[in-house]
Length: 209
Image 1 (spheres, rainbow, N blue to C red):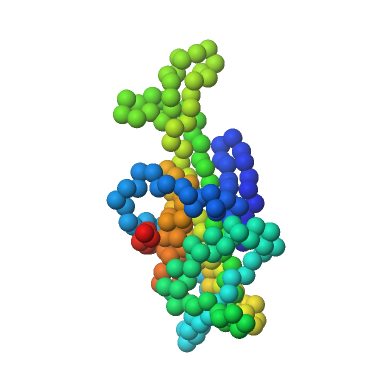
Image 2 (cartoon, one colour):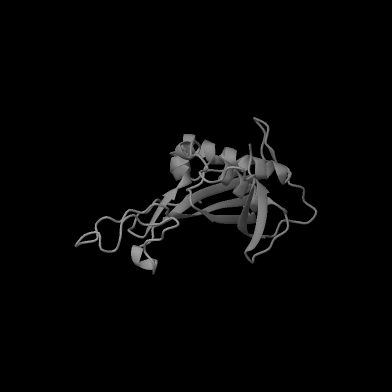
Protein backbone atom coordinates (compact mmCIF):
# COMPACT_ATOMS: atom_id res chain seq x y z
CA UNK A 1 0.00 0.00 0.00
CA UNK A 2 3.01 2.32 0.13
CA UNK A 3 3.02 4.77 -2.74
CA UNK A 4 6.04 5.77 -4.81
CA UNK A 5 7.35 9.33 -4.54
CA UNK A 6 6.78 11.49 -7.60
CA UNK A 7 7.73 15.07 -8.48
CA UNK A 8 6.30 17.47 -11.09
CA UNK A 9 6.09 21.23 -11.54
CA UNK A 10 2.49 21.48 -10.35
CA UNK A 11 2.19 18.50 -8.07
CA UNK A 12 4.99 16.99 -5.98
CA UNK A 13 4.04 13.79 -4.20
CA UNK A 14 5.97 12.51 -1.26
CA UNK A 15 5.34 9.38 0.72
CA UNK A 16 5.05 9.63 4.46
CA UNK A 17 6.56 6.19 4.83
CA UNK A 18 9.86 7.50 3.42
CA UNK A 19 9.91 10.67 5.53
CA UNK A 20 8.05 9.81 8.72
CA UNK A 21 10.96 10.68 10.98
CA UNK A 22 11.13 14.16 9.51
CA UNK A 23 7.38 14.67 9.65
CA UNK A 24 7.32 13.78 13.33
CA UNK A 25 9.21 17.00 14.01
CA UNK A 26 7.01 19.26 11.89
CA UNK A 27 5.33 22.06 13.85
CA UNK A 28 1.64 22.42 13.11
CA UNK A 29 1.94 26.04 12.00
CA UNK A 30 -1.28 27.98 12.29
CA UNK A 31 -2.97 25.28 14.34
CA UNK A 32 -2.49 26.80 17.79
CA UNK A 33 -5.53 26.07 19.89
CA UNK A 34 -6.96 23.50 17.49
CA UNK A 35 -7.71 20.11 19.00
CA UNK A 36 -9.87 18.51 16.31
CA UNK A 37 -9.39 17.58 12.66
CA UNK A 38 -12.11 16.76 10.13
CA UNK A 39 -11.21 14.28 7.39
CA UNK A 40 -13.07 12.90 4.40
CA UNK A 41 -13.48 9.16 4.96
CA UNK A 42 -14.55 6.24 2.79
CA UNK A 43 -14.86 2.66 4.06
CA UNK A 44 -15.47 -0.68 2.36
CA UNK A 45 -15.60 -4.28 3.46
CA UNK A 46 -17.45 -7.41 4.49
CA UNK A 47 -16.48 -7.70 8.13
CA UNK A 48 -18.75 -10.39 9.65
CA UNK A 49 -21.29 -8.83 12.01
CA UNK A 50 -20.63 -11.43 14.72
CA UNK A 51 -16.84 -11.22 14.56
CA UNK A 52 -14.96 -9.28 17.23
CA UNK A 53 -11.90 -7.17 16.28
CA UNK A 54 -9.38 -9.45 18.06
CA UNK A 55 -5.60 -9.31 17.82
CA UNK A 56 -3.60 -7.85 14.95
CA UNK A 57 -0.11 -7.61 13.53
CA UNK A 58 1.17 -5.12 10.99
CA UNK A 59 1.91 -6.56 7.56
CA UNK A 60 4.54 -4.76 5.49
CA UNK A 61 5.20 -4.73 1.77
CA UNK A 62 8.81 -5.30 0.66
CA UNK A 63 9.24 -1.56 0.03
CA UNK A 64 8.04 -0.84 3.56
CA UNK A 65 10.36 -3.47 4.99
CA UNK A 66 13.24 -1.67 3.31
CA UNK A 67 12.39 1.45 5.34
CA UNK A 68 11.63 -0.27 8.63
CA UNK A 69 12.44 2.69 10.87
CA UNK A 70 10.18 5.04 8.95
CA UNK A 71 7.41 2.46 8.79
CA UNK A 72 7.66 2.01 12.56
CA UNK A 73 6.79 5.69 12.95
CA UNK A 74 3.80 5.42 10.60
CA UNK A 75 2.50 2.35 12.43
CA UNK A 76 2.69 4.21 15.73
CA UNK A 77 0.43 6.87 14.21
CA UNK A 78 -2.13 4.20 13.24
CA UNK A 79 -2.03 2.40 16.60
CA UNK A 80 -4.46 4.69 18.51
CA UNK A 81 -7.11 4.31 15.82
CA UNK A 82 -6.76 0.52 15.78
CA UNK A 83 -6.97 0.18 19.56
CA UNK A 84 -9.97 2.55 19.68
CA UNK A 85 -11.68 0.24 17.16
CA UNK A 86 -11.16 -2.69 19.54
CA UNK A 87 -8.02 -4.30 18.13
CA UNK A 88 -5.10 -5.31 20.35
CA UNK A 89 -1.53 -6.05 19.27
CA UNK A 90 -0.83 -9.78 19.10
CA UNK A 91 1.33 -10.99 21.95
CA UNK A 92 4.90 -11.94 21.00
CA UNK A 93 5.09 -15.51 19.77
CA UNK A 94 1.35 -15.75 19.02
CA UNK A 95 -0.50 -15.60 15.72
CA UNK A 96 -2.65 -12.54 15.12
CA UNK A 97 -6.29 -12.81 14.12
CA UNK A 98 -5.85 -10.23 11.38
CA UNK A 99 -3.03 -8.57 9.44
CA UNK A 100 -3.07 -4.81 8.93
CA UNK A 101 -1.43 -2.92 6.07
CA UNK A 102 -1.23 0.85 6.30
CA UNK A 103 0.00 3.69 4.13
CA UNK A 104 0.15 7.47 4.29
CA UNK A 105 1.23 10.26 1.98
CA UNK A 106 0.90 13.93 1.24
CA UNK A 107 0.75 15.88 -2.03
CA UNK A 108 1.97 19.43 -2.43
CA UNK A 109 -0.13 21.56 -4.76
CA UNK A 110 1.78 24.54 -6.16
CA UNK A 111 -0.29 27.32 -7.66
CA UNK A 112 0.69 29.48 -10.61
CA UNK A 113 0.34 33.25 -10.11
CA UNK A 114 -2.00 33.22 -13.10
CA UNK A 115 -4.43 31.06 -11.08
CA UNK A 116 -5.15 34.14 -8.95
CA UNK A 117 -6.88 36.92 -10.91
CA UNK A 118 -5.73 39.53 -8.39
CA UNK A 119 -2.15 38.18 -8.16
CA UNK A 120 -1.07 40.43 -5.30
CA UNK A 121 -3.42 41.03 -2.38
CA UNK A 122 -2.86 43.63 0.33
CA UNK A 123 -4.20 41.29 3.05
CA UNK A 124 -1.64 38.54 2.49
CA UNK A 125 -0.33 37.79 -1.00
CA UNK A 126 0.22 34.23 -1.95
CA UNK A 127 2.94 35.32 -4.35
CA UNK A 128 5.70 37.79 -3.59
CA UNK A 129 6.30 40.62 -6.05
CA UNK A 130 4.05 42.37 -8.58
CA UNK A 131 3.05 41.39 -12.11
CA UNK A 132 5.50 43.98 -13.49
CA UNK A 133 8.45 43.27 -11.19
CA UNK A 134 10.74 42.44 -14.10
CA UNK A 135 10.79 41.64 -17.78
CA UNK A 136 10.54 37.93 -17.11
CA UNK A 137 8.43 38.12 -13.90
CA UNK A 138 11.13 36.27 -11.99
CA UNK A 139 10.29 37.67 -8.55
CA UNK A 140 7.38 35.38 -7.73
CA UNK A 141 7.89 33.02 -4.80
CA UNK A 142 5.28 30.66 -3.44
CA UNK A 143 4.46 31.45 0.18
CA UNK A 144 1.53 29.23 1.04
CA UNK A 145 1.31 26.06 -1.04
CA UNK A 146 -1.61 23.76 -0.33
CA UNK A 147 -1.26 20.17 0.78
CA UNK A 148 -3.57 17.19 0.43
CA UNK A 149 -2.98 14.30 2.83
CA UNK A 150 -4.24 10.71 2.76
CA UNK A 151 -4.01 7.60 4.91
CA UNK A 152 -5.19 4.07 4.12
CA UNK A 153 -5.83 0.96 6.20
CA UNK A 154 -6.41 -2.57 4.89
CA UNK A 155 -7.36 -5.37 7.28
CA UNK A 156 -7.07 -9.01 6.18
CA UNK A 157 -8.00 -12.26 7.84
CA UNK A 158 -4.69 -13.90 8.76
CA UNK A 159 -5.77 -17.46 7.98
CA UNK A 160 -7.47 -16.96 4.61
CA UNK A 161 -5.83 -13.72 3.46
CA UNK A 162 -9.28 -12.32 2.66
CA UNK A 163 -9.56 -8.53 2.70
CA UNK A 164 -12.24 -7.77 5.29
CA UNK A 165 -12.07 -4.01 5.75
CA UNK A 166 -10.60 -1.04 3.92
CA UNK A 167 -10.62 2.55 5.09
CA UNK A 168 -9.24 5.77 3.65
CA UNK A 169 -9.14 9.28 5.07
CA UNK A 170 -8.00 12.51 3.44
CA UNK A 171 -7.62 16.12 4.51
CA UNK A 172 -6.33 19.39 3.09
CA UNK A 173 -4.30 22.10 4.75
CA UNK A 174 -1.44 24.56 4.54
CA UNK A 175 1.10 22.13 6.08
CA UNK A 176 2.31 18.72 4.96
CA UNK A 177 1.05 17.28 8.22
CA UNK A 178 2.97 15.81 11.12
CA UNK A 179 2.47 13.16 13.74
CA UNK A 180 -0.65 14.69 15.32
CA UNK A 181 -2.48 15.25 12.03
CA UNK A 182 -1.78 11.79 10.61
CA UNK A 183 -2.67 10.13 13.93
CA UNK A 184 -6.03 11.94 13.87
CA UNK A 185 -6.58 10.88 10.26
CA UNK A 186 -5.97 7.20 11.06
CA UNK A 187 -8.41 7.55 13.98
CA UNK A 188 -10.99 9.10 11.66
CA UNK A 189 -10.50 6.32 9.11
CA UNK A 190 -11.31 3.66 11.71
CA UNK A 191 -13.99 5.54 13.61
CA UNK A 192 -17.25 3.60 13.48
CA UNK A 193 -15.57 0.27 12.62
CA UNK A 194 -16.90 -2.14 11.36
CA UNK A 195 -19.62 -0.02 9.71
CA UNK A 196 -18.91 0.87 6.08
CA UNK A 197 -19.87 3.92 4.03
CA UNK A 198 -18.42 4.06 0.52
CA UNK A 199 -19.53 7.64 -0.12
CA UNK A 200 -17.00 10.24 1.13
CA UNK A 201 -18.21 11.70 4.42
CA UNK A 202 -16.78 13.96 7.10
CA UNK A 203 -15.40 12.40 10.26
CA UNK A 204 -13.91 14.48 13.10
CA UNK A 205 -11.22 13.11 15.38
CA UNK A 206 -9.18 14.65 18.15
CA UNK A 207 -5.58 15.76 17.65
CA UNK A 208 -3.39 14.01 20.22
CA UNK A 209 -1.36 15.88 22.80
